[in-house]
Image (cartoon, rainbow, N blue to C red):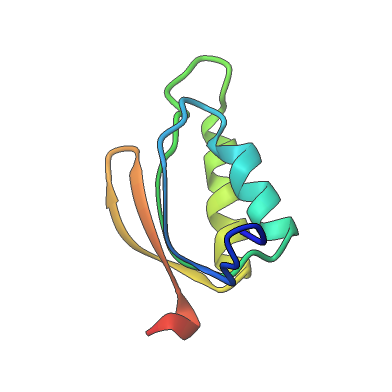
Amino acid sequence: METNEHTSIDLLKIDIEGFEYEVLESCLAERIPIRQICVEFHDSFPEIPKARTQRMIRALESHGFDLIHRHRHDHTFLRRDAV
């Protein structure tokens, strides 16, 4: 982001086959300003428990995101202060 002089992300779309948890954890830890996140959670993989997705949803909510849409494993979150 610094290299391109960006200060925020309008839309982060993630479908990375199970690695979404690490990316989202990093984004939250770094407090990267993101307006909207579209993510496919891969808790249907045997090695990823559904509880991990639930923890990530709670973490996103505690960082100011609302779940605004869900269809199967696809979730869309919008930052509360972005409305």
